[in-house]
Length: 373
Ligand code: MG
Image 1 (cartoon, rainbow, N blue to C red):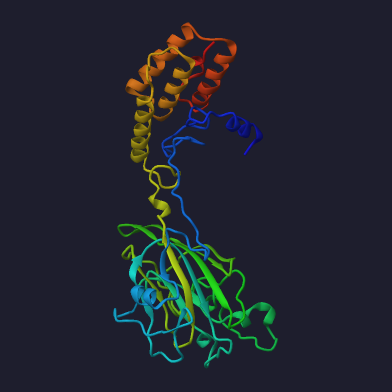
Image 2: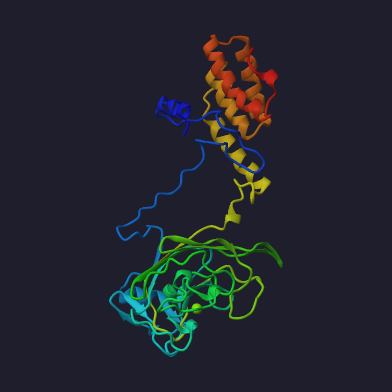
């Protein structure tokens, strides 16, 4: 914050700060810059385990949360081994992949996984602790690969233990599309953490508006930076994106390898395309104007006497027309301004009025000729 702005805030009265200050609403923005009328975000508390209060906890280590939230693909009870606050797949393919009973779309996901300290390569690097976090299920979903890849990093090449692999199939990869930018995986036996931000593709009928994106922090390190999906992830093939339901389960792959999971929570988040009232990218001009008019009406209703020829009234009405310069608001503003000009206060007061109106001039809501001389 600029020092001048801090001084202004420090001097502000305890009542709601408002007024003409930042650039005013426009066709794509229902709110002014630094708009004090803009609704405040909801409070979220984060507990000692790092779980936000608005998250859906999908697994907290207990049998209750395991059974309440997870099932096999066919809907029957999951049979991954539950032990020490984690559930674990086994060697061989017998237990089957599991999924959440509830379905999700765009989300923030936290999930932790671990391979056995003595993890085996089981006949090939893709059988070395393979599992996978599928956003929106296996049928049309998107896999962030889970694999034991500590020994796959570039600086291990040629050294004992090195495991060669294809990079778009190692841990942290968007499977078959994009390798992780770096390899922050810890040694097998240690817990690993994925924090994932997922936006599904956005369609309008059969037209793709946006491919969606996956961002992955792997043990706190950014490895997928808003990767825009090229298709639905699958083995060997490029499978193009196609429309699908807007919600699907979170799905954990059984790939015949023992992998443990714990501390799983998810927050549903809006699509960035849902912002219809304040976004240069996705705002709908009709929705913007509707909200602007609602705000103008609220502010106008607060004015005790719109006809008062005072500096405060001119500024208050100036704020109203910054949202909707039309009808009774425009008439009241122009009448109050004319009345004020006829019997305005001292130089300091006029400067305050002109500073406020200057925002409207700068944003071409009124002309420079409207300023008080
Ligand atoms: Mg996998």
